[in-house]
Image (spheres, rainbow over the protein chains, first blue to last red):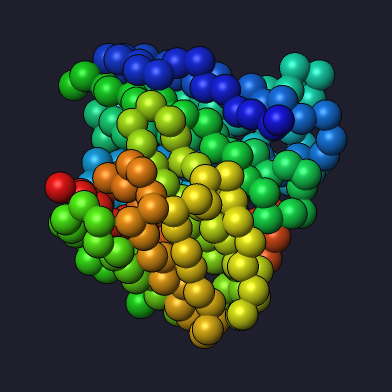
Length: 114
Length: 112
């Protein structure tokens, strides 16, 4: 069965530190990839997405992610985090792409210390 | 203001009672989804609907039922057959298959 793994369940960083959250999926076909963020008390919202083309995608608030097909990975990065980035981050995979099947990772809770 | 509205935000029910969670969208999206979010387990798909009067079971449909009589509305009923109903329920919609989903604020259901 398809699955999405987010290996970091809890991450604590100081402001200005760099962030990288891992996301690996298990599906050999074409996929669409997403990162969502859930700020405390707010609804899930899209950070960025990848459908095709340049494997390095840029999203909102300075986030970016790189799709590495050979590694089945879609890691999220930010060069310098802020206290306001404290949230839970979910990786999601649409597999096969173009279907109604979405698989979510278990989430990573990020806490940024001021 | 376009979006997805879930109500109520908090819901308490006694064990053995059915309860219906509301989800309304004004985004004119064809597809709607219900997810369950439990700590450490991410989001798991309960049901989804591609168009009006059609819906499909997700990974954890047992003990739940849905209807899709209108494009804007996709209510979820948590029945007494659901063995562990206490959870956070999220409704979402998307314009079409494969595109990003838009989420509501969620309903936290507590069964006592």
